[in-house]
Length: 452
Ligand code: NAD
Image (tube, rainbow, N blue to C red):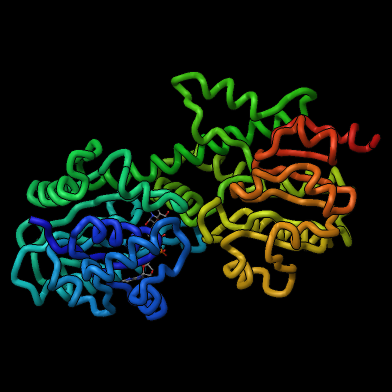
């Protein structure tokens, strides 16, 4: 029996998961308290860019499998399970801001007060260990007047999808983590996933709520640490004649104990999750008297990495004052328009503060960029517009359309071009002979540049 499921929060996680469930025949009710999002989603348009999402959203709405509402009671009273997918941002001090979680829990509790049947609440948002027990369970019990484990069930069900690949990740996850407060809740959630995935069910780990909460943080912390590690090695390579981090990464990545993924040196990571999650974990650790020095180092390396990119531009160009610099890529990663915490922001701000004239281009993120940089940069409609008459091009996001560019193209459009490859998308051998080429993790060839 396919149950009706509801989502509280229709952002990257909530909308993608809701649309995927609906596309597989589940009846889904999505609730979001943001009117603009509600309006866009109801008309079949996702409020953000995610490959494949608009298509499944439209089909699900047309088939009537997905309904969108601004009324929390409609969502809870007409479904059997509610996934909490609201944001969990950082507070000023880095600790987790649980205000949306509290608000959603209150709304769910108030709706449950009106309901006679058992209902499952599943926390998909990323929350620090003990939050589900101390905050969600407590608030839902208080507002509903009901008892967790008897009148309603509760699970922690963290999400691991990657923006830019969210639909694919939702349809083919590596595993499902279920942190259950009682067996009935765990059984119920497992059954829903078994119905959703059928034969293609990934491994399921059923565990305590606190383990489930921690798995999500440990996962992000490990991936972030791997990237910061290779960025640290990249910085070493830059000072070493003959060194190239790409070759070093390939060499260590072939060790089965290390593996090749997340060993790409670059300008640092951005996005809404890693920094806020690592800061939240750090802050949580301190709260319970545990220092997490590896997390501190991982964050520290990442904070300074975007400035390494500007240093490269400066070394190749001399002073940046009055120089025309083109930024190729603004989104925090390819295949998304998301600019939350994107490294492009730090790079552009630093270039502007050094007096450069900046033109930016991104295939999807220009509209979001306008509300960050306003009139302080020029917005190009395509790569050609962005590069014309510029003196320096910086590759900040590794979109596929940039990977195809040849050195001759830069030479044709730019003035004595300097190329800063902050994402290592170009072959140094191909570029170095034709343009002034510098890259993260590539031994500095400034002497050669200076001579030419
Ligand atoms: P988001 O900001 O894109 O979406 C959150 C949505 O919740 C917004 O649309 C907002 O209007 C809505 N909302 C806020 N309060 C609400 C309420 N009381 N009731 C109903 N809706 C409400 O956030 P996101 O990126 O989807 O992240 C959601 C959670 O999932 C976070 O905890 C995040 O850390 C985690 N997560 C995110 C990703 C990712 O790639 N974005 C991946 C895995 C996990």
